[in-house]
Image 1 (cartoon, rainbow, N blue to C red):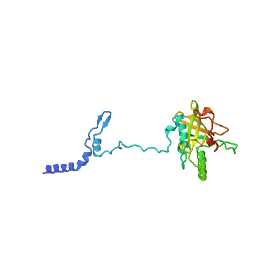
Image 2: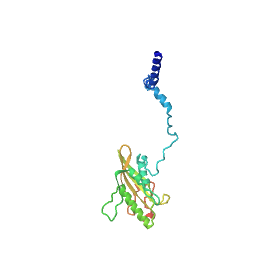
Image 3: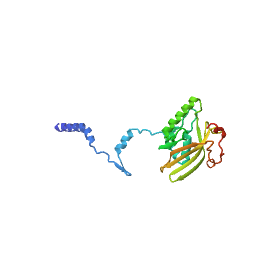
Image 4: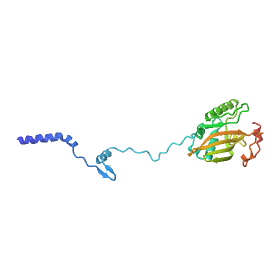
Length: 236
């Protein structure tokens, strides 16, 4: 009888201790797969938790804003000159693309318009100053009821480069609409360009307009007449 009680007590003790003993049971030994250790416990745990799905393969990035400057604007001399003309052109009720213009000028880049005959000095502007000047001109034109649209394009170019420096003489025509048969003014932009080893930048733009006593020389007008159109000379 005593042996039976002792056996029963031992069985009861082992039954009560089984949860604790299970913690100290020998766990499966991780096996090496290739150069990684495979943990069988982790495999079991992973099978219990569903893996969240990844992003759909047909997701497309949002298209860039049409007004944002393109990184390709500084990729070449051709590209940055084209970006300059595109940034300054705008339709009625609009303004130049100031964000794009700032992206092609050096932070200390300059714009020097023709000298005011009433002044003894030139006006030298950065892009911020040029923006203020253009906005005032647009506001004044609106008050007078004059058109505010402005489209400028290059009609000829002469380029001289050495190393990372280029000087561009870019002859331009300005119209109120791209479809206008004749420009209301012509001139030459003298554009100074620098390359930092990655892209081109505009250091400065200096320009002057054509007048009766100062026609654009023939060498800056390839395939174009050397005389000034009388239609817009009367307005300038």
